[in-house]
Length: 357
Image 1 (tube, rainbow, N blue to C red):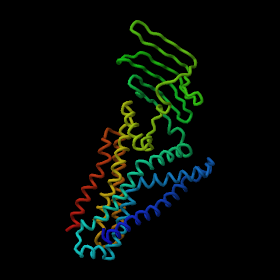
Image 2: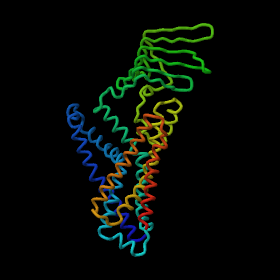
Image 3: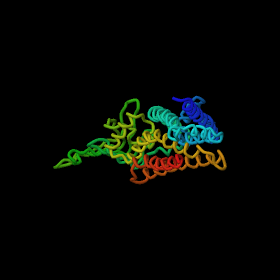
Image 4: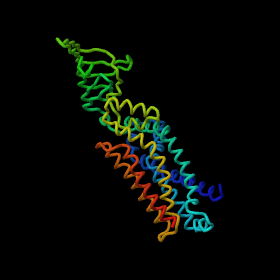
């Protein structure tokens, strides 16, 4: 590895860390200014607030990772170009592709770190971050489930018209049990509640009807404690659940959701695809950033930075738009995760070919 390789790698990584160090405190201050009244109103313990902002750092950095990387590369490469260092390197007989090598090595380091963080660190932080929001910040009603109809195993379906995850209580509950596609019995109750100390369900206004070939048997009780082959959390499908799981639990969760016919399955698949596509974006965005900032331009570094910010936000815009399409339609989650990367990959090839001329 040549001296200039080590020089570029050092500049790349230091500038990237500097960008994170500059923008994250600003994001924390903006978020704190927005929420400080609620912190005071609800008398949230200072330790909980500190832990929240630790998780916020991972959540925010993961969200705007493409912009930080893009700006870092454009910033220090534009400085090299303005100081004619790029011209000096290329004039020494080094090709543009060879000049790009230390950038790719640096992008590989960032990609590996992003992959590890995305698979194992960010999910845990995302769980604590979202739980804090719903415990202290968001309205309680925002986590209520309404009109849930769900397959919980091969033979049983449940319905609940309204479920409150805070009180662990649902209304108008029903469970249907099938054998060979024939309804064998159906349970109805006015309300269902999870009793933590007994580890069972308590049903009020309970009735159970058996369906046989010859006749029907009906049992009713005002209250009954029982157990079912599902967890109380199954009555409250959380949209961000997949974001809070590390790799192996995520795969298991997606398979379980697929078998249950979950309406959120595409959202969960999108999360899994993004765990792979986000680290790979390091290479595409690095090539684009180097291609647009390696040579002096009229307007100097400011033009390059403006272009970088615009292109970074366009990438995030595409990412969010395709995510919404998955949530609101039958748009493929694989396509939503990989199409922005493919589009920007084509752009990187085009800009790279122009830079080599």
